[in-house]
Length: 498
Image (cartoon, rainbow, N blue to C red):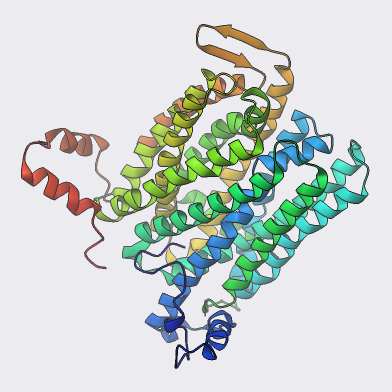
């Protein structure tokens, strides 16, 4: 998804079949770059196919990040509040992606039986993205404030999310086969970096258009643009060469075996348990994050966009390359980065409990720490899943991860909505501590996040060393010795194999 040596913007002079740089050839070069590429056996994939494919996956995420940031951001919550959704409804809304992720094993099973990855991904992804156009235009026709309207719209969103969830194992398996193993960390880091930049810029512009008190018509324009970016993301994937997988027609895989195999893997199981518990703890507070920004912190849509994905995205970009190179260069780097970032992710949210209305310095501090830590968390988690899964079963392992994450995330989001309803009208201050309807779940969330950290030592790979070895190595470094800085720089350079 990220490339370390390739610019995310495709250079026209590298496009296939381009013979000159004249203006007459430019349209032809662009069309050639985006044309459909077939699925080939792995032995027929050339280095150029991999290079161009990795390049296009980054470019696709430049568009796709605007879509995913848009459909999961504060404007989406604001639009449903306008349609009459209560905090409990919002909790259900936030839980829908996680509920849909429970279908990923079905996608993995279909992929294993048919061998279809690219075609399956394209067909279902187009359907899932197009459903958002149905949702926003249905809101123009149906009466606002009606439970029937909300139920219908939620059903449409769930259908779209299910279509996208089914494709995730196919996408992961396909794209991970494109990327050389020694480039995982920095490649995913670069993809994250460019996605965050495009998402931040795109949403800043769109949220500025929404203004402080948008009409439903402005929401329609906003989500139409966001949906078109999502469809363009899938269109770019047409130009990525597919990699054929072998299918055993005589003994087709059984669904339950595909799902059970990753759970039985002793080195992968602790990661699954941690992911499920940590997702629940995170979403217990995060499920009401957007409402907290709108109603507790009294921020406008544009101000929220300056923070998320603005400041959050900037810090995510800064951290992406740093963490990506540590993942590649440190011994057991993906595990070390995962542990360090999990600790920061678990503790930084306490800042929100001490934040009052429009206290921008505290909001900025919390989101800056969140951006840095979440970037490393996701890069390391991606590397752990890929590193712990056999190459022939990556779709299965991703599906198992998605199910455990989805269950925890869904239960956390639903619980967040119920807690917000339970604490309705709460306004308690004790010194700098502010407990309200939406901030109190964050206090509970922080406590549960910290308790999840005790599961981290059980996440180990065959060559993993005790974390104390790494800690002692850090404290043994002398900051006044030149060799220390040579060592540190070597860990932040590009991997030697590149």
